[in-house]
Length: 125
Image (cartoon, rainbow, N blue to C red; front, side, top):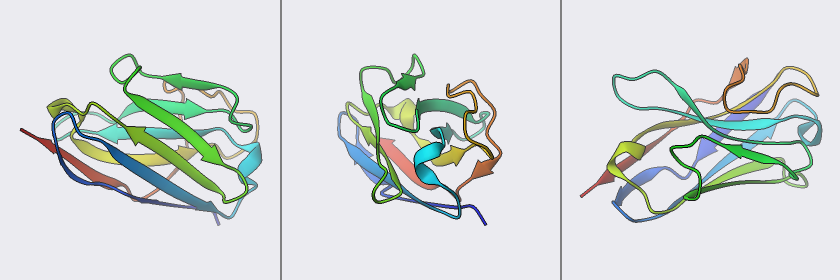
């Protein structure tokens, strides 16, 4: 079964940084697009970033472009999200996600069927 386990969330002051990780199992990691989503309190879940199976192509939401970096280590079946220059509006639960097949659309606007349990990021002044 597909499993996605996020970690690395926490509380940080505005302007600070965090690195999130997502360990994947139950599927061929290096053949799947991987994604990060987030959900702020009272808001719908939004796509933050995606990365192609090889790691060669990344796409970002406008709200995080230039501040967040997505990467992956296919040897470790692990996805990362580096968050820098954090803002109050970056607060939320961050989820990693993947498709149920190789070759799915790899953009933050795409729909993904598999999700982790999430990790909380709280940005304060």
